[in-house]
Amino acid sequence: VVDAREARQAALRERLAADELDGLIVVHLPNIRYLTGFTGSSGILLVLRAATILVTDFRYEAQAPAEVGSAASVEIAAADLWDRVARLLRGNGRARALGFEDDVTTVATVRRATQAIAGADLRPTGGWVEQLRVRKSAAEVTAIREAARLAGEAFDAAVQAVRPGVTERDVAAVLEHELRTRGSEWHPFPTIVASGPRSALPHARTGGRAIERGDLVLIDFGAQLDGYCADLTRTVVVGRADERQRAMYDLVREAQRRAREGIRAGMSGTAADALARGVIEARGHGPAFGHSLGHGLGLEVHEEPRLSRSNGEPLPEDAVVTIEPGVYFVGWGGVRLEDDVRLTGAGAELLSDGRTELRELP
Ligand code: ZN
Ligand code: ZN
Image 1: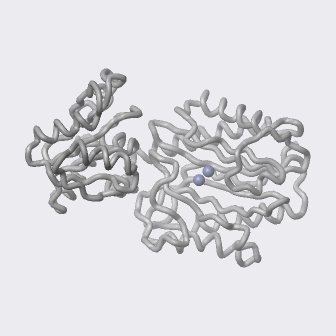
Image 2 (image 1 turned 30 degrees about the horizontal axis):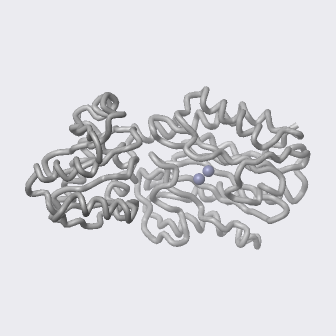
Image 3 (image 1 turned 90 degrees about the horizontal axis):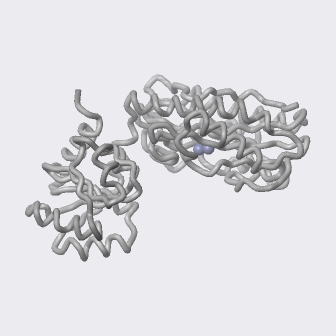
């Protein structure tokens, strides 16, 4: 059995050879984790034609070798990481043409790298590792499914805390407690609890507003297992939904159902987005759905592919994506429903609980 990390590195090396590069400098931490298993907060990974070397610092002297095993050799830099990288490259005499992640590297880092690695020919290779990450293995899908399962269970436990007089922050605290005690490693993004008119802010910051009877409460939250993220949104009504709340809820639910049933690998991101958007536009609410349908999920909570009007590329098989249509009306409120699916040529496999029925809380 080939270690998944070694297979990923082998795929990168094929591309290095095809592009006549001597190596790749990887600084984006989720990419380093994907290629080696290293979970630390500081490191530079060199993927050379015949060696993989992780340069990190003293804090990871014990952790790094334990995590990476045979997937890389580990060098602990006493001072500057780039000085050590430069020395390693000098030792690998022919490593001159090097790819770097131009999409995530800061100008300052490029300046530092250029200064340290004198004579290197740095070429932009942004997105190479991300493109490998799009297709999830069975083990990766399992991690996301488990994260989504625990997130759904945490929500079921926490939703009882949503009642008049309780603040958004109180609800977030209960939900985050439930997520953590069920095994979530961390919150992949700040939990959103947005109540009443604030639910019209698609990325609201959870605040101190006390929930009132009759409110829509939009809750967007995540869980992380083995580094892999789940991302769910549920919208509930405190008390009985009024006519407009029910109509908007049913509309978003129908849009989400149509997208879940119609999406498949091979379809463009634009076409996937249109599955839900068409339902909302047909009822004249197109302008209220101002964001895209969804995004890839994996080691990062927002990754490729995008289910957006601007993505004309076919969606890859085994990508994991969110499906999250919503409508937002300033001063009134908003509704969003978000579930996570794996794409196949035949359709979508639901990874989260898909519990989108309207919940009217007592
Ligand atoms: Zn979300
Ligand atoms: Zn999302």
